[in-house]
Amino acid sequence: MRDVPVAGSVAAIRTVGAFASAADPSTMQDVPVLDSAEIEDRFYRLVLGMPDSTVVDMRLPEAAMLKRLDEVCGADRFDIGSLPRLPAILPQLLRLLKSDEADGTKVARLIGRDPVLVGEVMRVTKSAHYRTLKPIASLQHAVVLLGHDGLRRMVTQHVMKPILQGSAGMLGHAAGQRLWDHAEQCAHAGMFLAKGQSDPFEAYLAGIVCNAGIGAMIRVLDQEVWPTIGVFSRSFLTSIAKMGNHLTLRAAQHWELPPNVIDALRERMDARSKPPVTVLGKALLAGDQLAMIQLLAENHRVERATPLTKDRVDGLPALLVDRARQDLRRSFGPPDRKIH
Image (cartoon, rainbow, N blue to C red):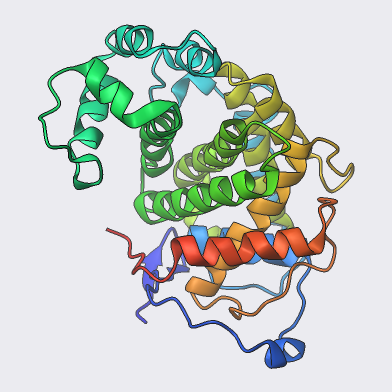
């Protein structure tokens, strides 16, 4: 493993592709049980390319920097419109795809108003996964071939992946890829956990957008943080993550995402002081942590057999969450997840 200098004295850790084999349950008692704060701290250090730190309290330079970041990102001061382009038709399209009146003609007509989405729909349906005996001759044909579930996933991935990967500056691409990997796995786990109790697409959408604000914060960090500040203390990093989650909620509101998704993101943001009560909020919170643990394990930041966090407040049955974890491993391992 090679250390690369990034943003001051911070060392970036290159993503490790190999996904370890299944753990022996008999060794589970030898693996430390971590709390949610420890998992989150390690995850955000992975995203930022930072080593672990034993420094808990915020240092004076960090306190001054946090004040500056609050001036830029606190409350409603951050310009949500500065985020990468979100198709103007997205809210209308998502509503249509949930409607009983959403036939192929209406959906194709709406997508046809956005040339970028048209190109993405045609590109996806011409891939090997959707290859048909007859050539796809029209947008309507492509829409019908994708189906509502496939189309909704394609649209949200097409929208969110560039937003997370579009971070500017030295931290940008590697951090954006890791945030996308997490969002994709969080969305998958959230769908599994909410199955039969909530709209599966809303569960997926909540996971996909959950890192939008963190991506925005990383762009701000590239521009504002002094190189001399060095490795972040735990308190400083926690404060940054809290700001990022607030920006995610504001972005979801700005983009007119479904109310249930907005409520779930709010519950996730407030989980430490008030446990979630909605099915979607519980699924998002649990899926968020499962995805963090899996990515940390892939990058050798925690043991693969690391148990569920000891202070879980998602309120879901441990057996269900463990099943979601096994499903996540089957669905996302063991490909080589390198930064391209």
